[in-house]
Length: 157
Picture (cartoon, rainbow, N blue to C red):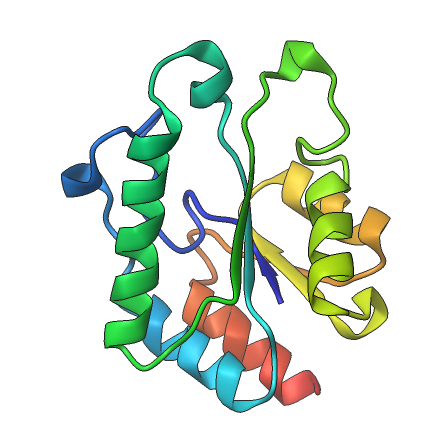
C-alpha cells in the first residue's frame, strides 16, 4: 500500500517544519492497522520540496515522520517505510510524484508487486503515480476519508 502524506493521512500544513503543527487524522492509525492485518506493507511516499527550497532540514522532517510513525503505532498500526522526495518541481527529478522513483525504491526494498498494490492519495499526481507504477488507485478528499478508502480496498481484495 502506497500512501501519500499531506491531506491523505495528516492535515496539510504547507512546508511544515514543526512536529507540534503536524496532525494525523484520527481514523488513520486504525485504518493502517486494518491494512497491516490484511497483509499489506504500508509505505508512505511524499513530495517534500521544502527541503530543496531550504524551508526546513532533514532533522525537522525526521521529527515529523517519527511523530507519524509513533501515532500510527499507538493505534495498533505499522508503517513499513517512509520515502520522500526532497526536490523542487524545477529540479525535474525522477522521484517527485507523479514520477515513480519513490515507488521503484519501495518495490526493490520490500519486494512489492505493484500489480497487487494500491496508491491512496488526494491529488492528481498521486493517482498518476499509482497508474504509472501499475497500482490500483483510490482518491481521498471531502467525499472519501482515508478510513473509507481502506475499507473499499479491503472489500475489493
